[in-house]
Length: 441
Image (cartoon, rainbow, N blue to C red; front, top):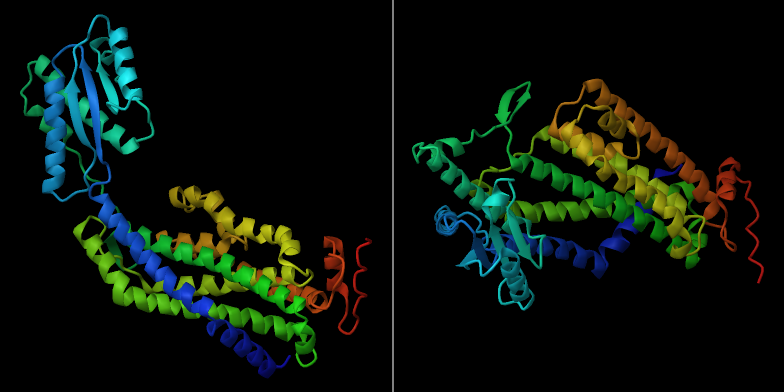
């Protein structure tokens, strides 16, 4: 194997992709989209609830006025504390005209006619059964429903305290909650764990996830394009297939690292201060990225990329078009996506059996073990075993992909079957199989 030729292939793959307008357009578009996403969230989160005009059927006649005051107090407190505003409620009290069923039917017609958004029924007989009825054309507005439910329950609790002859200020004492503050124990001591840490880990997880998908597919597409254009026949005259495959994988990987370097510089100079400012005004705190997280990210990035890039390169070699390769390309894609199925188990029980399996299985370990090392401290032997399995699997799959690649890139005609592809692995160097026969017309 000639490393001089591999470096030449790396340079060709890298320069060809970095010089394209699509590369720079995509590189610039991601930070712009991310900043716009953050800006839109900040702008809309302050008053995302809008307003609701509802009618209140207070059968007892005692709950309407306290409910109006409670909702108004909550809205005033949110404005004063610069918190995210909820729904602005416009309440109207209606008497029960005749029986309750007839009144509810009349209000139903008003909701359908869009004269009101909803109506709330405060019936003592239902309240005794711990039920409050809310009628609207939309029952999926969870923020609005939760806000209204808390206000009604607060009013009911206050009334029950008064009915028992207890002091009114007892309500404030009963509503006090103790905040649970988690602290992460490490060898250096204990540090308070805030939401920003999880946010940082999630960003790294998304970067790994998109890298394996996006640049794996680029390897597959690059192989198919060269094969379709017959460029590979010229290249193979001076470069061995394995050298070409390795150079292609490394070159495309360096393109991805270049994009991440540019995005990191943009984040440090523009995005990160803005995000840190948002965190510092809330309860999440400024994210702190430990050196160990960065080292694990680089390690699992390299191992995971080479693993999936080898798989996608081997998938692209036997086929002549993207359409032919798509069906087989779904297999590694399903392994990458499957990590999110383990996500609840990884977060809730990072040392449980499911989490250990996901962090040792080579196709999910780059994401699963990175998450475990970032959010906790898994046993050292599991980390070492996961890395050893991942590296050995990467070497084995790269070898297998090289055997398939050296035969597949020169095969044209009928789409090969899976057994045929695996038979190519057994061919010795210099022993080329006959091209697959074209399909009968």
